[in-house]
View 1 (cartoon, rainbow over the protein chains, first blue to last red):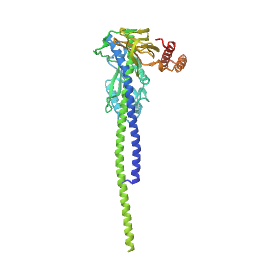
View 2: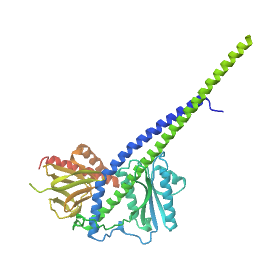
View 3: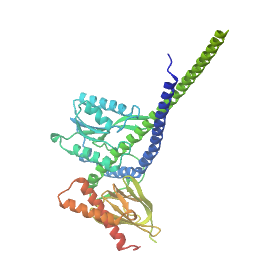
Length: 297
Length: 140
């Protein structure tokens, strides 16, 4: 038995209301992506200058610094997982959590102890539910990270890295985040932030100029590398934010499209129901009239 | 007219200023340094909570509050690179002074968390910069 006309119209209205919401969310996500991209662009000069400076110091001497010291046999690794604060972003958070689980499994398989750091409410609640201990967690800024916020995360990670192993320090730090390739493609990635791996580039230009350092190369490096690491971590947060917004926009767009299909289908059903109701009424009237005239004769 | 060179003042989240300049003065952890065109390439750490001064080619004087970071001079250009850089025009001096006072009080009460220290250094940089602007509004 088909649904009644009234029921169909009610469902239609409710789907329309939902569609309005999803469309609004789609538009909001779209406008925020633009903002996120502008924010990402405005950090480029800083990143470029830091890279130049690191290259300059590295070309001057063999870089020997606690932050670049590779442990031959890492025993304990810290993993920072960057997830979203809110849902309604398709598979964004679950993709990153899958990736993180892979990383945890690989590291544990290699016999390392894993220390988990979590950013984003989705990841926090996921792992809290699964009783995974977290050394640190942050939330509330997944879609618009600022420098002070990512600095706080970075400082904690750097501190942990510089702590000796015996006192709970870690031998390496990895970040699991989602790289923003394009509006259509965002990919979960794993990157090691510490220890830093300094690559000597053969890039031509004034980088190879003979620099003098004040107070000295070691002190410059001491100040430079933490800034570099903080900048990397901020970069990962911004990439994750752009990816989150892009996933959200995509998810909301398909929700809006689905709602549109549903509305069309429900409208058609409602029209059919109305037609058949009218037909039935006419039949009843005609039948009734026929019965009346028949009884008079 | 002194020869000019390209200068950039870069904060963590923005390019604060870029352009041709004739002189660049900054406070490094070793002391004051003045950069003219064709200075030897140098990378120096900037003092926390200090001021950088740029004399632009068109005769303006540009003061910037900075907190740590670097002065990087290469063969072709010079850059002030700091996690925090704020132009003097953007500083609300009254706000900065009152911030500085309250932060100072906090420190005296034994609060020496990284956050307070950072806020203190930045407020100090702002006050220093604004004072210098007032002291010689048009020294150039």
